[in-house]
Amino acid sequence: MPNVSVQEAISQALTEEMRRDPRVLIFGEGVATKRYDMVKEFGAQRVRNTPLAEGIIAGTAAGAAATGLRPVVDLLFSPFLCFAMEEIVNSAGKLRYISGGQFSFPMVAMALTGAGWGVGAQHNQNNEAWFVHSPGLKVVMPSTPADFKGLLKAAIRDENPVLFFTDIALAFESGEIPAGGEIVPLGKAAVRREGTDVTLISYAKTVHSCMKAAERLAEREISAQVIDLRTLKPLDEETILNAARKTGRIIVVHEASRMCGVGAEVASIVAEKAFASLKAPVKRLTGPDAPAPASFPLEQAFVPQPDAIVEAAVQLVEYGQTVAVRNLPDVAVAK
Image (cartoon, rainbow, N blue to C red; front, side, top):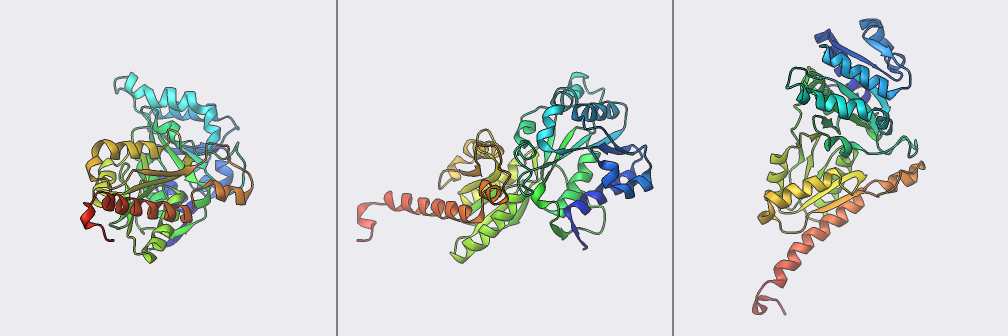
């Protein structure tokens, strides 16, 4: 399998889908400038630069989708989605339902998110939970080049509007991707590592932090399972619950702030449907409830790191052991 960057994986997905389906087009801020090879292949009608006007871009995409096209729009940084909430949330997300299914809105809105480039708070905010909470939208946030390609292809083919977030820190990370045009289905999490003592559930860049933490935990003879959600909506409840029942200890890790984040939903699902399997409380490791700093070292402090994940996992394992000892009859406790 070839080794490519996330950016190249995205380009491959776009190119292959545009070759496959003449209804697919891409436009947005700097699109034609950044993807001039696609302009040469598909022409200026299907690959277009736009003004810096996110509401107009998203509104045009919603209209194009309603007429039978399959637009992909690049809105650059995720905080800029604030300027397109009416068009994405109140129009594209609701009109299929309001029309009784007479219209579909197969559009993809792409945006960069998270720490990694030191672009400051107005360009860096993990706001994916806003869109998870919005009816009619799907939300994707991959962690590997193979998933960026496979999930983007699936998003383009979906009949609903999809928010497709690229974690800035992953943009130039490389990895293997299948040689063919493999589709990764929306709504299916990936088990990145098997384990029996504790489960680490994450998405985007913090999946890699969880993998590093799992390696360090193995050195302490703690077996950590790592789940990559990949799609935040629809959420793969089956994989989450299987993991909870397997290990009995859950840590949810993400860069977005704690309050009402995706981690809260995961914790709630586990508490409601797998409570009897839990050996310790569900724990969340998240970014702070604060604007993101522009300083690169401060950005790294903003994001949950492997050391913090290791510490949390050890605490959960020790919690279970402490409770078990506390509940034993006095005669069974070693003196």
